[in-house]
Length: 299
Image 1 (cartoon, one colour):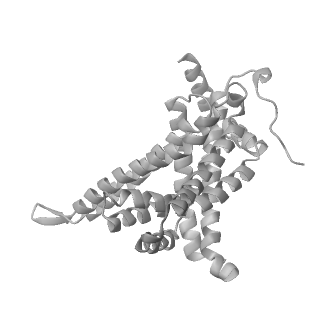
Image 2 (cartoon, one colour):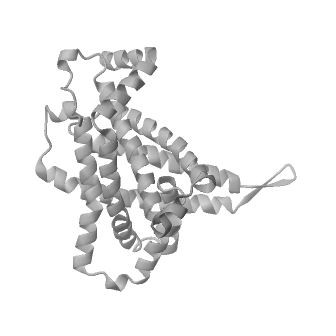
Image 3 (cartoon, helix red, strand yellow):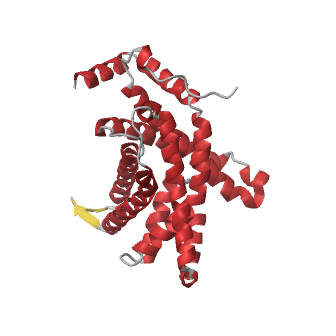
């Protein structure tokens, strides 16, 4: 506890120096290159992952309600592009009879690629942990599929809660002779639900992906950092694509893929930077002799 207090005290004493050190370490670890790899495989994984999830959850929840929930929270990850992806999901589900065992296994495999690459990227950032202990091969192989199941359960719970909040939004309250709609209150609760789910998801990534046991406090530090940075970035992206962007003029029919990839790369960059913040927090107060060797550099 003394070590944690000391670290927190040091960061609060020199927050600018800590942020600068985290950015330098992120650059030394080729963070943008790692984020590009994660974004590319996330682009390959996102549609198969959503298809597998919708197929599984449609046995418990109405398909239309499920797609509405996915569209609402996909907008958090892919500003302005959720309708195109949800449309593809709906079209695929309308022809679900074409799904055979081979296609299902293929989708499961591609769904796991992003998690595998993310785990490898985390290993670079948490080099000081990997140098001490390594994860068993079977654990790394099964981890993506366990995470897919956990995401499916989380989506099920979010869909049920979101449905209840939407029902509340259709109600009104009579007070002091006036009728007050609960639509705004419901919208606020839906936003807070999404933000809480975002922080919880990011925290779980930081708890599970790095090698070795990470404390909940450290994981929450990275989760809150990445979530707040993404919230700011997400609103900037929404404004940019709505007012200034000319990407549709340049890329034409490839616009959706380019915008999705760009959004995923920015999200992956912030996700990995949150991991770098945790890694730097763990190394606050270490002697230079105990620090890991300089990260790999190109050029």
